Length: 282
Length: 190
Image 1 (cartoon, rainbow over the protein chains, first blue to last red):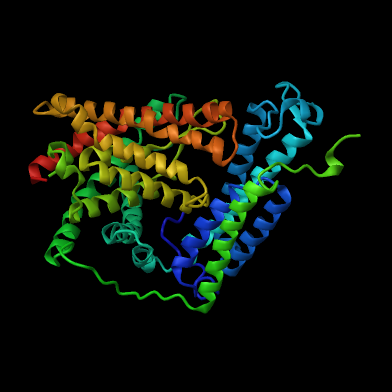
Image 2 (cartoon, each protein chain N blue to C red):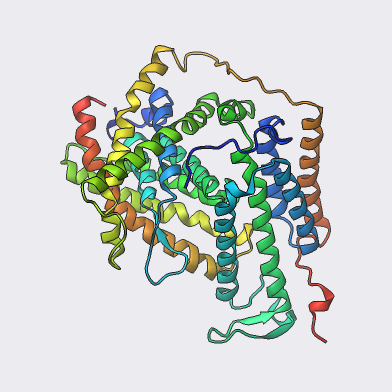
């Protein structure tokens, strides 16, 4: 897996936006999506999410493995919840579901409501994941600190976020070097037995040197910050961020989405499960 | 100076040391969290050796470092894996709370660790980390509201498996990390 932050969306419409828009847009979208259970509205949110994702122009070949993982994990989560919940759909009383039958072996009831519930859950996760991708691939990695600082995060924490992104490539290289060094010494890191504790203990020769090396090397960075009197006054940033007209319009649209979803959840049936009529037997 | 010898007020101070250790913890956790060991006989449960970094950084460098390591590190790990930084934001918060609570460990087990051997202090860190895991991951039950998951589904597929494997990870790796780090810290005067 490539750990280094990659600016795959460089030059795209989304990458040209103020990076604060990507963060605020994602937050608004996630909190809007978690209030929606009507699958028709969820499909609208999925369309918005993929339009957003498409505007980042992230090459699919570069993120194919990430999509495979995400879809597999969401599928597993939705199926496991469906099986373990024993057909109970929280928003619908048990005597009001339209039962199709029972799963073999486990005996879980399968109803029109439980299928729609699982489908809505699946779509919601996929929409949130599609919205989240541009945050990693369409923001200049050097702009993370100023992005959070200009969003009101205290500058010390914003600087820590910036520093985190800058540490990732070098720590990833150190991690690979440590693995190679231990393998040269004959260490086999692959899990061998069925004992998880023994398998975990086998990771100690890799994890401990990587972590301790990173910490002992921190003094240089700390000294550099102290010598520049970090923390003694208001800090300025190399990048200047400014919302343009398009950014403002999109920002208002995301705010309207969140406000609209919240009002609709209280006043309409958007927060309730909707079962297509063709799925209701006889 | 590490949090192991700090008083109450200095636990919450934010200086360059706290910022750098926070960033190191989050970066390491974000990178290493993708390395997972599957647990035989289960479908969705795997051991993440990197999780030990959350209680370790909390216990060794204080609650702010622990919180940042858990919160930001988990978000980065989720983002790198394709899951999305905010898709499961309550889990990132849970990781942060684990680091925060582990960072408070030296306060509530201070008498045990003060002046004792490296082995005792490492064991104390494992105990503090385990307590933090059990409490911190209660935030997983927010999935019942956020994703309308069933209580039994959250309990059996999320909370219990995660708590069990993360307590094991904490018990095995946190003492190992501290056992190496404490002498280094004392030797170099940190």
